[in-house]
Length: 457
Image (cartoon, rainbow, N blue to C red; front, side):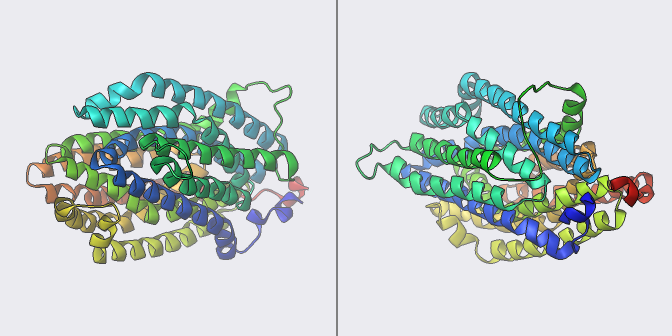
């Protein structure tokens, strides 16, 4: 009965994937817009403020890694348990998610409180940049509880196939942030101009509204998961199942923090403008990558559900369909970065020197987009079926084993050559993802057997 009731088990794959992915893609695009708008406003304060935000990016990436990585594990476990028709275990996994979200916040807050100054002092000796960076980072980490709860509920709802409420949660947070940014940064409507502090406060207020929306959905709306902390008891087996996927996902995204930190150290040897260019790139590329991540949010629960249900055809079909869409998005993104790098950089008040080094950077780095799309979809499949280590291995190869050594070696040639580390790393990672998929298919996917219909009833 359940398989007939849950659209992830029977609906045609393409319209199903679009119906689940489009809301997430829209919300992720809005989030990308917020990221860019935030940096545009900050760049109007000063170039040093933009540098502070750029240097803070690895800290934010680490924070997001802890939050999102944990909830990727919850998403995967809940969707698999629903596919296996184990409703109580799915509910229990979701309840564990709330508790783990609070524990994640405690760790993030402590890191921000005691580690911010040391991090920025390691990255630069410019005291103004250090002070601005610490101000921003302390606020977004200490008040990250809003984001922790918000993302937890979003990922849990997505695991059930519900993508609409998570979309509205993201929209509420991002739109609030976009509206408050100029008001708090520059001091409109009688409020004091708070500069970079205002940008951070706008961020956490937006996250707070998103969290409140999610909590209202949990309490007042019907959905496929029931979360109750009454008589809650932490179970080692559930935590282990969550972090079998979640921990590799955390490491994968945390690696991005390490990557940007060391890339900034390489680029600062050329100029502060080179660091700003990398920061601008990561803001701009979010318009291309965020829709892909929205696509994976729609694809992962479908893959996880059908893996749990033993439906190989639908599992592999979702991978193929998702890959087609992902490559199409990346083709458009590559064309935009190749043709319009100067107008994109101009959004951030780029001076002549920044344009000089930024235009070739955008064109070279964007060559990585298409192979990255392929790697992301395979990584999503690995996470959906509980093989988080495969995704972690891909991330390690792409962002540490390959890109950093290559970037350092190419930096000995020129700044332009350094940017080629991005496409080289993505191509190597894509080749490895193919090999890992073939191995997984032969060992596990080929042996999938659908759950017997009578057993489901």
